[in-house]
Structure formats: structure tokens, C-alpha cells
Image (cartoon, rainbow, N blue to C red; front, top):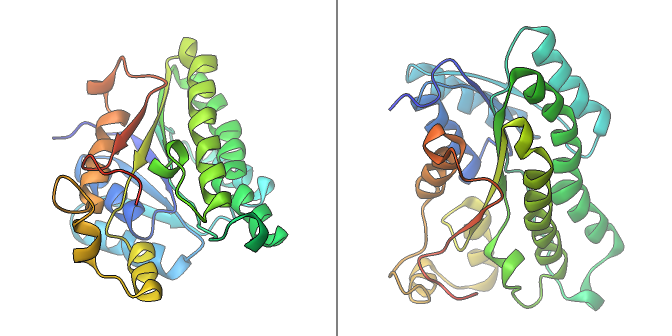
Amino acid sequence: MQRFKNMTAIVTGGAGGIGAAVCHRFAAEGAFVWIVDTNEAAAEKLAAEIVANGGRADFSAVDLTDRQAIHNFVSGLVSAGQSIDVLCNNAGLMRRGALMELSEADWELSFKVNINALFHMCQAVIPVMQKQGGGAIVNTASQWGLHPAPGHIAYNTTKAAVVAFTENLARDYAGDKIRVNGIAPGEVRTPMLESNLARTGRNIDDLNALVPYGRIGEPEEIAALVAFLASDEAGYLCGSVVEITGAQAVA
């Protein structure tokens, strides 16, 4: 399929895990992909992989906690004559701990990366999409933003905010033909998950046993959902947050 031929897609947190799979998927379907990630070396490597596979991609190490850096990045694309057809707000971080275990710095950083970055990125991109006559935005929330897991109050709260942000943004800009949707993944085999397994002493089989479908998700499966939501095939989906969990209850 070439659902994104001649389109430009921005993917934040694009260098690893779900983000990298999303970048590969968009590129395979014809998009020019902008990989935005603080890990510049990983973003550069991913862009090179996509180009080597016949796709089109570039990268930028944008500090998503810096409003001006975000606006400068978007302004640079517009000045270069690029459209912005798809925005995937995928960047995020997890700081663990219940309320009394969490530092103020971790609480504030969670909001800066997991929700404030969406606010600033969308403020920069939506005027571009309005002038173009439309676009698609897909935000990465979490199953835990809908059904909180214990001991992760900062992550759960910010991901719940992503859900509310998505629904509000969709309602406000549907009239501009800007479709805004979100995804709420459960457990997915990513570097973040694998590092947590190493910390807790559990393994993949332990997590698979918790999923009614029999296994946790793969990044490529999440990327397929993102691509669908961003495509014209989902032309009437606007303001939805889709859980993709294998029917798993909160771990």
C-alpha cells in the first residue's frame, strides 16, 4: 500500500521501540518521514536504514521540553516547502513510583515530555494543517491512562491527560478536517519494557501469561494501527482513542 505517497509525517520519539516501527511503516507506505528524537545517533541510524530500504527520511534532535525548539523545527519544514500531513506524537517517558515515592522533578518532567510536548507540537503544526485543508494527528496514550496501574501515578496521570487532550483537540478542529485520534497500547515488546523486566526479574513469558490473546504486542502491530488511523481509510474516525491490548487487563 502507498497510503502516504507524497505526504510528510512527523514522528516524535521516533528512534526506538514503537516510534521506530511507526517510522518504518510510514516510509514503506510512501511518506517522507521526519524522525524527531533526543537520541540523535539512533535517529540518524534509523533514517539511514529507511533510505537504504528505498524510503525517504530525515531526522532532527528536537528538545521536546523546549517550546521554541519545537516551533523552530516546524517553521524550518514550512520554510523548506514541506507539507505536514501527519503528526504522530509518540515521545514519552515513564517515571515510576506512588505519590510519596515520586520526586517533584520526576513529576514535572513527566508532564513536560508526556503532555506539554503535545501541546506545543500541535500548536505549531495545526496552523500548517489548517492552511493545507486538513491533516491527521495520532497521539500515543496508554492503557494505563484509562485503567491506572499501581505505583505509576505520574505516568498514569499524564497518559490520562493525553486521552483528554486527544478528545478535546478532535472536537475543536474537526471542522478544519484535522482528524485527531489516539492509541492506548498495553504491554508491547520495546526497549523500555525489556529494561523493566531486567529490573524486576520477570521475563517475557511471565507477561505473555497475563494476556488473554496469549502474548504481548509487537511494535509493528502498534505501527499498523497508527498508520490506519492516519490514513484516509479512517476518514470518519476523529476523537477516538483505540485500546490495543490483546484483551489484557492492567498488568
